[in-house]
Length: 431
Image 1 (cartoon, rainbow, N blue to C red):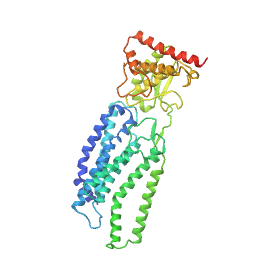
Image 2 (image 1 turned 90 degrees about the horizontal axis):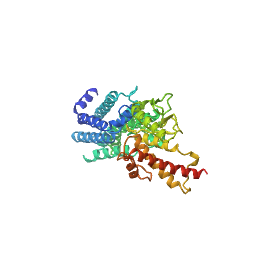
Image 3 (image 1 turned 120 degrees about the vertical axis):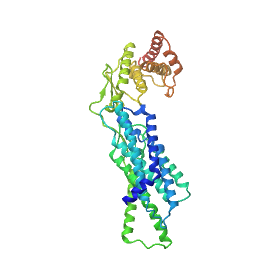
Image 4 (image 1 turned 90 degrees about the vertical axis):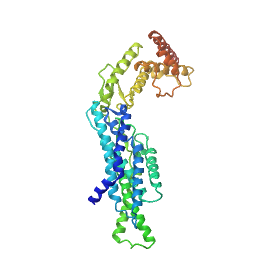
């Protein structure tokens, strides 16, 4: 068998395509490098993201190669003795692609002075399971026969739909058990060991089906046509046990625990060395320089407006129920928006916030949103938001941008006017 495997390693077309797939994986990863460099969980998760496209593409290539082999030499009983070694060669090629992606993530993170740590094995195992399952689907469909175009096209569609329809589920929800591709790896999220194990079980079931199902179908067809001897008791027991194990594996995958859950809060988060301390997860330490600048500006802005801020604010997940901020990729725009909201909210007691039924509610929240918007721009030392950053609130962004481009005295008067509007409305509420 080892000799056949070595032959398949030399003959396999997919093995020759694997370097191109690895190059594509690296290119897609580096295209989003700003999102993950310096952050080990983000770097680990990003290895799975390109598999949206590479997984189905490799499945189609595997199916095409198998159909080509079947055209060269069809066995009369559909056994395809080369199928096992060929699938093993494909799986080795897939593992090589993932290994190249992992090496890229390690090199980039080390050069970006990432904090102590390494790639999270859970994401790597998921990536290996995904690419193995896609390759197995290609081999399975290729062995089942049909027109030359049928197996590659169906393999691509099946794998793509499998990945895209189960992506984007909320953390901790039962639906996350089927998620296999991650566009981000937030530090406050971790993959459960049981969920990772079930992902491996799913891939193993598909690999087993790729190896055994075509043989089983050919044997059943031969028995119906009475061109084969009846199975012995041992073979029947083995087939029954295999089917039961596969059904059990599928049932566990479909009813298993969530794959993603919120992490336990660390004892020692890392914080900026500023009067207003911004604290983040240890894995996000690479964001501290940008957050330090943001914290200094936020403290100065609050002091200029005569408002008070807490001594520290934590990133999402570190203090459930408390005020917090979020970070997306290497941008602190979301954190600036959160801090601007915290500054503005300190101007009015919570008990005095108007309700929708109050006459001045519309004016209050318009002033609130406009003041928050300008403070956000000042925290970022910008005069406009990035083009792709949306906002669901009904506020006049053009007016905020106009104010941001005016001189300091005009901006101060503009902000004081919004503060007065908010305080007058709150005074009416708490009279």
